[in-house]
Amino acid sequence: MKIGKYEIKHPIIQGGMGVGISWDKLAGAVSLEGGLGVISSVGTGYYENEKYAHKLVDGKPYSEKDFYSRDALFKIFENARKICGDAPLASNVLYASNDYGRIVRDSCEAGANMIITGAGLPTNMPEFIADFPDVALIPIVSSARALKLICRKWKRYNKVPDAVIVEGPKSGGHQGFSYEQCFQEEFQLENIVPAVIEEAKNWGDIPVIAAGGIWDKNDIDKFLSLGCAGVQMATRFIGTFECDANENFKQVLIDAKEADIKLLKSPVGLPARGVRTNLQKMIEEHTAPKIKCISNCVAPCNRGVEAKAVGYCIADRLSAAYQGDKDTGLFFTGTNGYKLDKLVSVKSLMQKLTIGE
Image 1 (tube, helix red, strand yellow):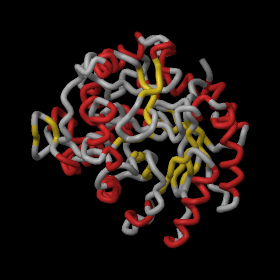
Image 2 (cartoon, one colour):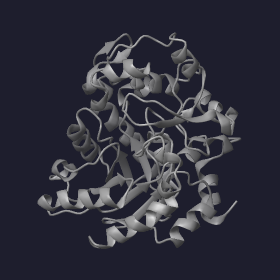
Image 3 (cartoon, one colour):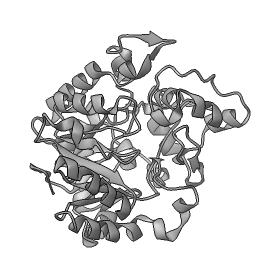
């Protein structure tokens, strides 16, 4: 798979998962094994027990400057490079992030070969990589219409996406669809991919990457046969030894049943898929941890206003999950998360995904 100037041996991109689920160990291992490892820029202030956060309030990185710690991001890339060498590495930067442009530039300076952006339409994404012409840009969309809008807006930069990820409604975390659309046939991945591929051809045959609910080699082959250049997979990589998540996080998914995986309300204003745990019960009973906006993580939350409306702070609950707190953590997963039954190495998983089970 070729994206920009970079060759990726296997057509598999590991999805970016924050807070702390895909950092140096997982991303480095995936790139080492011939996929594209993706480092999440979200919540880097929590890396190595908040070592690189310059200001903490109540033990949490303060405001967007420290929640999205530049120093930690550089260290994560440095450590990932020790694992994968010069193999391509990407950074996932949410468009909803406060300080989005700064985080993109930080990622480029830290050594990212590609920037992947979802959680909004990144209409000004090229603006922030002017000094890094070799960095490939990959927006995430949920429709051909969204890709068309991005390409039109990018005309002023004389730039088109180096690839595009089309994400269906079976993915983990935030969805680019309403609650109702997530269950409607017309919005399922296999039904939105063809239109995105056709739109991509209008702009120079942009490589299209399918994402959301892809689990095994059969799924990969299916989307390659539809004309995709590759796939993005996130949830299945949680079930690896190298995944940066706490062992308790991995165990929550291993223990989860299909019925436990639900669409949840989120302060971001979109439905988000995760495991229903004690946190949701606490929210319903109004006993969830007190909401105090310390990290100022995403713009749509409006400094905690939306967090209070849904009953939890997403930065605090995702970081609790990363730290292994089963009681108050928020555990994102795609629809297939219940299929995880044991941990394997990234090397073994990549072999299963490219050769077969």
